Amino acid sequence: MSTTPRQDHQEETSLLRVLGNWDALALGFGAMIGFGWVVLTGGWITSAGTLGAVLAMLTGGVIMGVVGLTYAELTAAMPKAGGEHNFLLRGMGPRWSFIGSWAITGGYVTIVAFEAVALPRTAEYLFPDLSQIPLWTVGEDQVHLTWALVGAVAAVVITGINIRGVKAASAAQTFVVVFLLLIGLLLVLGSFTGGSAANMEPFFTGGLSGYFAVLVVVPFLFVGFDVIPQSAEEVNIPARQIGRLVVVAVVLATIWYVMTILTTSSSMPAGGFTEDGIATADAMGALFGSDIMAKVLIAGGIAGILTSWNSLLLGASRLMYSMARSGMLPRWFGVLHPRFRTPVNALLFIGALSFIAPFFGTQMLGWLVDSGAPSIVLAYILVALVFVILRRREPGMERPLRIGGAGNGGTVIGWAAVVLCVALLSLYLPFMPAALTPPPWILFGLWWVLGLFFLFRIPTGIAPGADAEEQLLATLARKRG
Image (cartoon, rainbow, N blue to C red; front, top):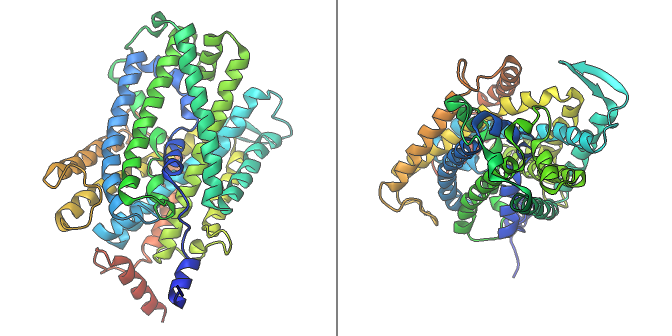
């Protein structure tokens, strides 16, 4: 059967549908299981106690699960690259769509850069003499050339894999996720054979402040389930199933973090965890009585870095591609590679930021995490709001996966997601448990100053709806003409 010139053009300028169920799930789950479970678990146990930390993590899992339900319905209804970008464009119009898209892109970019810094820091535990040729000092940290090059070279490799195609990136992701799961099974086995319930005491400590100290890291730990909506145009499975995978990924990540807390706490008394050590690696070594097993756990931490890095680079590039396709960002970001049909320029832009990040040293780790978290939660609030808006404005919209049934159950879930995320966002404000220090606010501000430049270039007066993107493109074309 012959094709028309228009069909040929669409095929040349569209993404490839090459991902299956496992590919999409590996992207979402792998994005959430980064490096935090390796280095933060000891602090969670010390702050809140074993069961206190588990309770906080379960609370976080419930919050992200409720948000994930709204994503599930919207993703199934609008399976297009860009996720939040499309939801908000239809329900709230171009400017709100840009704000939500820019927010989640900022969160993704900060974590991609974080992983580029986390990789050499982790590698240093395996290779203690890694830091050679001092360059400069950032904060109180001396930056070394050989140390920074580990992250920079990895940035080049991972960006190159993503440029070569989503299938290549997904194959790499699947391999690393399987390795990560094997590490998890080893931790569980070690806990049963070498752990002790007595080591888990005290079960609760620190009161509410200890509980909140764990809860505030939830946005950083769970960001990534929304990578599945970003890749929806590249997934070759029914739309209903894409939505379900969003929720499955959140459930699996919650189980992973709870498992990490329980197995780590069973390995030794809480007082045995050093503040600046890698508690989960120490736990693995103690459970098996072997320093080699501790290094195997470090390899698992590196696997987590790579899965998160790979997934969030993919998600951020698809968001920038979608915004460029709608005219919200320069057309340069919407260019697809002529052979691999991946958003090559968006990938190069984000890859360049991750290449630079290691040259700011380990001080950058905390700044990146803290500066990205508020933007992530802001995006979740907007998605929950647009879920409610579309339920009321377009009750007849085709929804292959309807959350909470056809009645008011879905609306209740949407409002619950809004309230829970607003409460989570409030924890970052001054005088709250996770109040940000000045450097993260500076990074946060710089990202949004750049965003405002693009925001005010978007025309006003365009009504939300299924044709909002077409209206926007037509308006921009008239302005250029």
